[in-house]
Image (cartoon, rainbow, N blue to C red; front, side, top):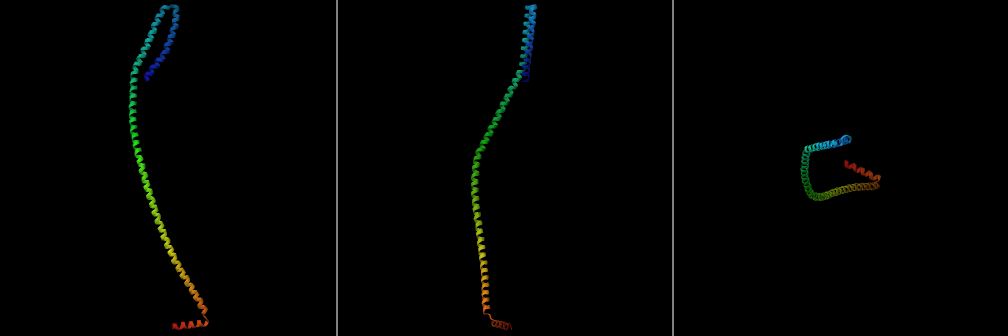
Length: 195
């Protein structure tokens, strides 16, 4: 590629020189026409053909030398790129097939996960209901024990209170009936019992 570019640059560079040379030759021709028109014109035509043949030969040589390897390298590069493209295409097709296989299995996996989560949800709801029922039963049993205990305590308190009331009423009745003479008789009776 570099050689071909060099050859083209050389050809383009030589073209203005040749044109300039031709213009110079034209000036020379014009002067030579004044001196010797016919003899000079024939010799200049020969130089023009010699310049043309040299330029064509040089360009032919450069193109022949550089074009073959350039096109061979370019052809090898294109072949290599095509092989690489085919390899990448095959790899991409394998990856696409793998992704499609995963997607197909993904749908069944999602369905399995949904059914499993539904089963777990039902089991969790049943477990929660059972635990709630157990807790309610425990609370009810505890409340029944508390009520029974409070009832016993209230009955005992009621008995104590009624006993105190009965004793208090009996004491009032006894005091109401108690006279100083009755007290003396009771004290004497008690003292006698002690002896």
